[in-house]
Figure 1: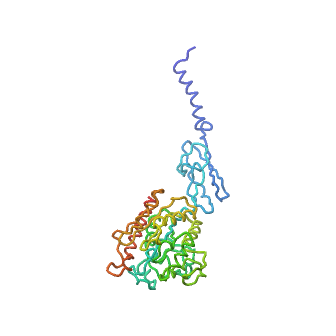
Figure 2 (figure 1 turned 45 degrees about the horizontal axis):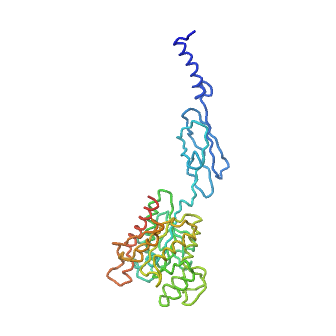
Length: 402
């Protein structure tokens, strides 16, 4: 017997209702439940895994478990997969049984460290509107000029031997970046304002900035050679340049004494090795992000192609720190007048790793005293150091943080 239209409707309703009940409810009138399992993904907290049950077709986990912990890492949230998972929060709709995983960030990733080397402008010259060249000065000027309060997230690692350091700093220790950063009786440099500018720019990202500086007045680039014998041959040849030997002792074995001799001497440590050794130490707590250099008032030794020696130093630093070739930027600042051809030539030695080496212009950056002697003309004013340091920082921000 054929069913009427009304009979067909009754039959369809009888079929659909159980399906709806099975889909939304475990039994008619009882909503289906789903389980969310929270996996701590190698965390230290023993209370995991934890499970939370939610009920309903559009339910959420209104209260998440207390964050797990993991030594050396920050907990930054929950993800639906260990790799490339979507974020899971208390607003995420749960419509199936699911496991979510703790997402971790190595605390070292939040400490960005920069290496710096060069001549007197990188050291920080006293004559930059504060003291007089070559002399000692009371560091009351640090507070007087308002430089005793660097950003809370800006630090310096002491790089010179202990008896050359200000404020009782110890070689290899991290300290708030109150100037002078390099050695006692020195002033501010572009490194101060480079670090301050970056630190301020990334403070809201919970990132710390650290800098390690090895710098010596007036030296040719060979002073920073990766080769100990090349360094020794250079420094012992500087018979009349006593300041180079006087400052060089800050980065050699303390047994050398107060001045590097002009004859052969024994040392394991030397400026390049000091920079690399401290870089390795810094990698225990942070990540090397870039290198800055200010050099060029005096070039490489005679017979040495300047930009090729720069490239050799760069490559050696990366190899010794187990960094991939070309993986971090190298910034070289121009000298006063912005007309140094050695510095301008540096990118030509990096053509096989483009977008790695950059020249920071000093155009319009004022010298300490343009009307005085040559020694004043090769050093920037305090305003000049601030401007040049910011230019370094702006380029690094553009490369790494924008």
